[in-house]
Image (cartoon, rainbow, N blue to C red; front, side, top):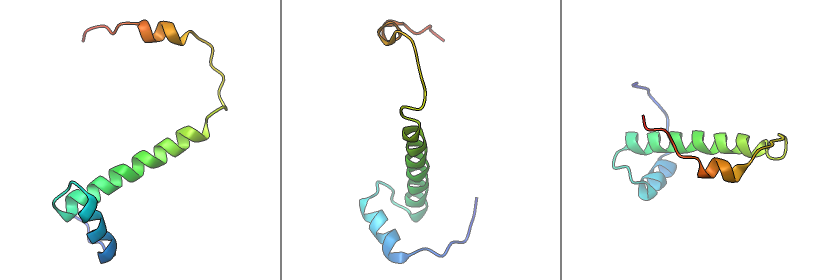
Length: 68
C-alpha cells in the first residue's frame, strides 16, 4: 500500500543503521512488525497469574505431532 508519511529523519537514519533492511520501506516494515510483536507480548505478560491451568506439562512435551 502506498502512503505518504512525514518521518523523523534522525530516527529513520538511526533505524537504517541498525536494521538488516536496505531500503526505507524494508526498515519501516521491520519496525512495524517488531512494534506489533512487542505489544502482543506485553498483553500476554499482563495475563501472567490471572489464569488457572491444570494439566500435565511433561506429558504434553512428550507428545509427538501428527504428520500433515
